[in-house]
Image (tube, rainbow, N blue to C red; front, side, top):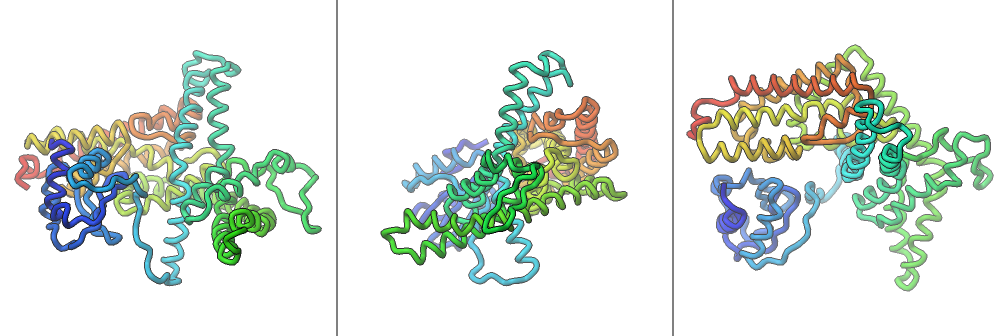
Length: 470
């Protein structure tokens, strides 16, 4: 496999050299070029470079897909071309349309984009907190019984877990404000208001907060661990902050801009938006519960598990997972979409393993082993998607069959996900319940891997593809 310096050199030459590059940045998986003349690169020539997974022309940029190793390639590219190095940008960086069309599809896309852009950045926090909870459960009485339930170790694990989830309104307020390009610290303050100790203490009591002669409705359990209430508030914060700062003179904007924004926002937040968000979260949790218990609940789980790599490829998974994560924040577990996407985690890996073993061409075999290990150990699937599924087409059969089998077994045995985990540690996401839940989750993953591997072994590659002739 070519080294990073060679990849950078070959890509730079293919896009027309440094003279044809006005700017280059990178995201999590792609080099993003602003070219002087974007007709110079030939897509097939760039795709043929060893280490390149694909190309895209999007957002006014020429995008070269490298995979998770792109930061090192970018570093070499900057050296080779003498470009100014910049920090990584959002993976979903795109130009907004010049004029928004108020169609149902555009409105839905905008809502899902906002929801996912606000929630997905929280996943590392949720995953970290969840793994600490898993450690306490795994070594505690429920599983290995190596430490007592009242031990300091279990206490510490639970404390970190609770910290990650309890303060979710603050974290979500920050990320949502970033998504809408407004002040993220005011976004965090908007979330902090909802879980301020004296206000939170009013939840479930007869005493209420009275403002302007009206009583502020407070949920029975308060707003801790919720997402939707604060997410409803941040769009209004964004509008108010911009309008007020446009009106105020420069001399007083720094002090009075944030103050007046919050002064106007807080009554709307406490009286209207946060209570509406609580009702929406409750309704969403009810919908998931109803869907899971409905006669067709198994089919929904099976379909998500079977098609999840396709959803990732199209970007549709972001909206679905955003909604699922918001629901997870409300109830603390998931037996639908998050669970379905997690149990199928190893099916794509099994496809990559089968392709790597079947491949006879040494160079392609080496690449496929890399794709497999990236997916299996790290849970990063884009190299496998572009390098195997899109390139050879037929491996889709394996992941569809394996994912469907894993999802079906998980649905029948009512597998529930209690924390967040990915890659090699995916089974730990199911360790929050009893042993039967953990065992059934592992069986579902094993079924998915076996079915995906066997299907791919017999039907995933043509003879020409295995020999590197196609």
